Every structure is written in C-alpha cells, then in structure tokens.
Length: 184
Image 1 (tube, helix red, strand yellow):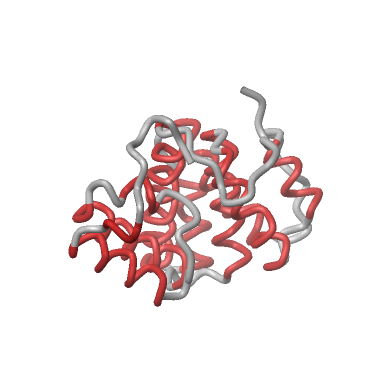
Image 2: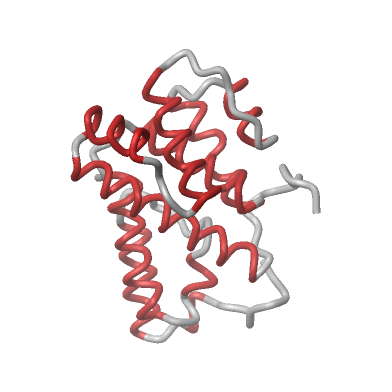
C-alpha cells in the first residue's frame, strides 16, 4: 500500500481498530478503499473521520451527482491520485459528464449543461482558490439549496480535502490502481 506507514494486518487489529473496520465494512461503503487503512493507525481519528465521511458522502442533501462533482473538484485541486481513481467512475455513473470530469481533472472550468453542476463547481473552486466564497456565489447556493445543504457542502469539501491530504502524505493508492490521473 505505502512505505510511509507500518504494514497493517486486519487479523492483528486491536479491539478499537476492529470496531472501526467492522463499522466501515458493514456500512454503505462496504470496503476499505481510500484513507481508512492509513487512519486505522489512529483508531479514534479513524472512527470519527469515517463517520463524518459517511455523512458527507451519503446524507448532505445534495444529489449524488453533485456530491461526486464536488469530490472530483477536490481530488483535482489536491492532485489526489487515489481519490480521483475511486470517485471518477462513481461520478460518471451518477451522471457527471465525462467531458466535464476530464476538464476538472485538467483544472479547466467545464461548460456545464446543468446550472447546479456549474454552481457546485464554482462554489468549490472559489473556496479552494480564495479560501472564501463570494457573496454572489454564496447567495446563489443558499437560494438553490438552502443554508443546511450549503453548510453540508462546506463539510463535504473539507472532509474530502482531509481525505486527499491523507492519501497524498502517505502516498496511498486505490485498490487495483495501475495508472495515475495526475502527473507527479
């Protein structure tokens, strides 16, 4: 997996680690692909992070297409190899256009056919580019999605930035990953 972390053998897991692994495997993800085998070396962080991740991925109030679009923007901004590899096919299956995904991978703004896609992209891009969101973009997002979903969107972007940082720092790859979507 990575040379930066000690090898982890699930059969040698502590009770705390087993509890995390069991919760992840019995939840909506059903697998340990992503940062989980990195986080497992800190079981308390792993437990909190994976629960936050389950919320951010499945219960933000955004349709899956928009959540996955936001995740792709995050993966591209952080050049997170595994995050992109895991979420790109999910995003396409959820309805993100291949051309839009490719433009995002190349850090270009797509010409979106859907106004919601453009709004999610612009919100995430402004936040990553300026560490703020303009009044105009914020107002559009709140008008379209409401305050709660906008709060959840910020949480989703923050969570997937944490995922990207984890994957990048520990040089982690997705299960079966044989190519890198980002140079270097």
